[in-house]
Image 1 (cartoon, rainbow, N blue to C red):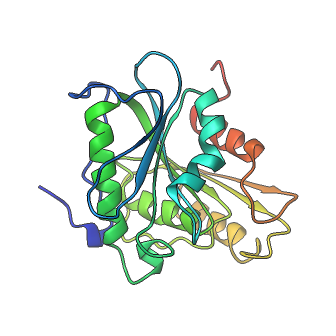
Image 2 (image 1 turned 180 degrees about the vertical axis):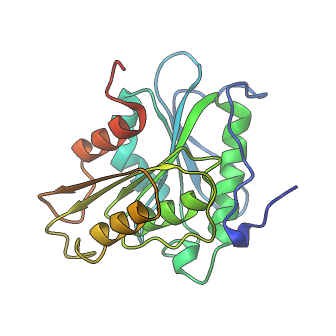
Image 3 (image 1 turned 90 degrees about the vertical axis):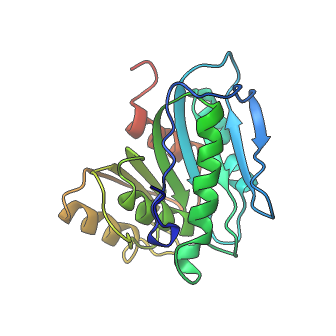
Length: 226
């Protein structure tokens, strides 16, 4: 039974035995119809099961910017990345209510499910995308085992399912979303709600850096070689 997008619920369930031909290494644009945009980046090498990171851009961003932010570090770790572009300037949760972007993400995940062998899945994002990843991820804990948020502003889950692990990083000099009322408060609220939270502050602003992406992937997957 299809679950309603306006409740933030995703039906797709990637697995290790996809029925279709494997996605090639490199970046592939998925055909979702209309103006919906989704990109999936597959690391080099022979096809085989691998982790999948779903990444949500910040306000005014795009799927391409998501891949630019995390794609290189993810590829080095053998992690595939799926990124969609929000229908409006930011994600539906912040722009009128859940529905449109949830449906696009679910359709993109379904296509990935058909062509990519996936061992484990995490949802991540930056700024508004970080808030979106935390909120949508808590409602879909049966799909996402970890939520990785870079400089989120808030968390407002439409529901809660499972107990995904949470990693949050926030810059102490962030002038866009100040750390005291954003990252710290979000981490404290999720910890109080019983989630396993790793919270890191760094000496910087409103940014995603390769070092932060590495820290996020290490928290999710363990250090390389583990």
